[in-house]
Image (cartoon, rainbow, N blue to C red; front, side, top):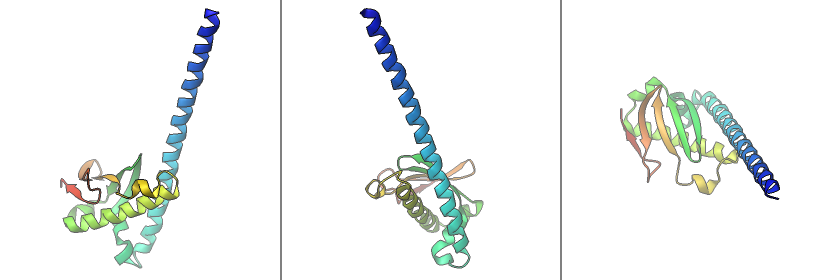
Length: 145
């Protein structure tokens, strides 16, 4: 009887571990799908930037949006972004957040309610961190450079 219990417990552990592994794979695939959708939308918006820079010009400064899970993203910017004023940087990142939030909701990664307060973003140019959203106000940024 004790042997059967041990085998039963071992079986439960193995099945549980397998389910955890599958969940991790599904989450990774979900993030990849979101990242792909983010890049597709960013590419599309860039095509509008030349004809309507007032609405889409911000996209020229954004190289890539990396989804980190939850409400976290890293925004890779172009070197030209560094030359913008703090107000212009804020405008570019706020518009980028709007795009990212739309994609996260469209992809089912987050709900409208979950992204309402904004995203937790890190803004980088290559390996250099230029700024971060503030913990309590995700549309206000602390600029380091």
